[in-house]
Amino acid sequence: MYYARVNLYPRTLSAGLRAILSLGTLAFCLTAARPGVAQPAPALAAKAGEAVGTVQVGKTTVTLKYAYASGPADPGDSVYQIMLTDGPVPPDVLARGLGMGGAKALLQSGKLAGITMLISAEGFLRNIIPFAGDLRGEKMLASAGRLDSFVVTPNGVTGQGRKVSAGQGWSFAASFNAAVSKP
Image (cartoon, rainbow, N blue to C red; front, side):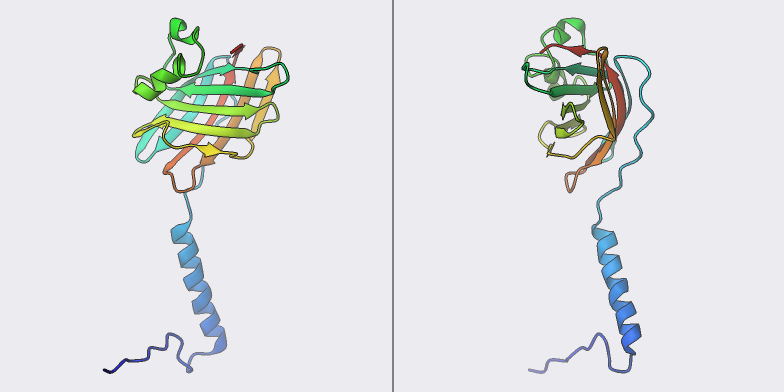
C-alpha cells in the first residue's frame, strides 16, 4: 500500500511565511471557537421595581421589565436573591416569596420568562439561572464573577451586568432597581 506524505509547509516556503500561515490558522481556530460577546448592559433602571435589558436563549430574546429582590436571608448573611422578569408577578404570589413556593414557580411553568440571581452585597454573582425559551432552570452559571455594578441602599438594590454562558447558549445584559423584601 502506498501512502503519500503531505507536507503542509513545503521547504520552498520561507520560515516567515510558514509562521504567518501557522498564526493565521491559529487565529481562525480561536475565532471559530470563541463564545458570543455580551452586549453592554443598559443604563441603570430609574424606578424601583424596574428592569431594563434582555436575556437571550438560542434564538429567543426576552425583554426584561420587572425587578424583584429579597434578602439577606440571615442576619449575618449578605446574599440577595434577584429576579428579573418580562411580566409582573401577582401580589399574592409575591407574598409567598421569590423561591419555588412563590414567584420562581411562574418562571418554571413558562407563565413568565426572565432570570434569577444570587448576589453578594459586594456584587459577586453566586449563581444566575435563565428561564426563557427552552431553558426553565436547567442551566446555570455558578461563581459567575462580579456584576458591572451592585449597590445596596436603605431603599433597595440597584445593579447592572452582563454575562455570556460558556457553551450553554444563553446570555443576558440588564440593569435593575428593586425594593428589597425580607425572605
